Image 1: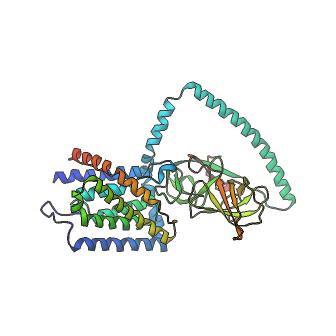
Image 2: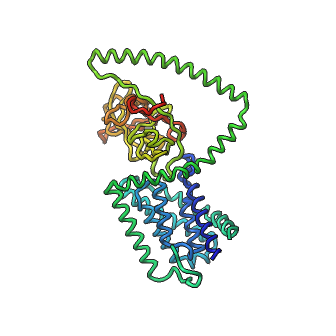
Image 3: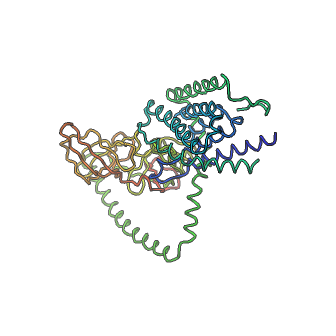
Length: 159
Length: 286
């Protein structure tokens, strides 16, 4: 049971770090390449420890993202619960994938998440739709192995 | 989500997952609809972003450290140099402002002759940027002045070169400033030398705005300065907004395509000015 508690600490820690990274000021030139840190951390936990978190956690994290980004409440919540569901129904296969294949999967999942967010926003009328979010999905996929290694280390040392 | 002990490890299969998803989706759609339709959630948002102030502060921490280290290793000579430069610059600006006082007085006398209302001078408060929009499609910044400092909704924000944007959301200690380049933003302007009015729309790029509905025959040239016209009552009159950078005349269309470049350094300025009309200026500022 103590092991469970330590892992919750790791979950909170990784998400806090992701939020800080998300909010960090970047030069405008590289802003379009910023990986979706929070989504990546959620994916890590869903793939590695699906017994710990589920759709409810995904939805809560999405709500948090709504607060941070100042968009309409519910947009990120919807997209995050949707990708949580997608990952959870496939996580057994995902665990078997080599890292490169996982990265491709991450590209699609992050792409889906961003697509849902941007489609909703342009439906509501607060954004102009363009495909530039695919860059963010690409950078997220490229940084996925790093996230995997660092988070594994962190979780292991907190165990 | 709480899921029993290690003996219940069949956790993600079966219909429950789909029901949970359905519940989450229904809940978020309700939230979106409520948020769009009603204004009650605005106070919740303001309250929550007040709680987020330390997070914004923390996320700025690396750049603060960076600045601190840079200051630590600045040599005496370069500081002295900078000081000299700034003093020179101050002299020049002071001379200009001396002239400005007399010119303003003269202008007001002339306006009195015409029975027009006097131009009210505005005051400013310096604010520092503490965060930028985490979204790539929206352009706003977060500044370190909030309700406690008397910031109000719709207040104009400048940097040392020109108009930057307006306050759209206020929490206790910080507030959010929508930049003039955001797709949701438009600012009424006029051309400085001949007074032709137009509206500058943000198009989501920090480098360009677009002038809407300007007839092909208008007297606008490249490099003309656009200043805020004060129409609409949001922005004070006469602050530089942008400079015309390209004009395309398309004979198939009745309006010219005019791109203008913002005067303010939207992606670089850290120190900003909040414009207060003299009456609303908080105590202890100039």
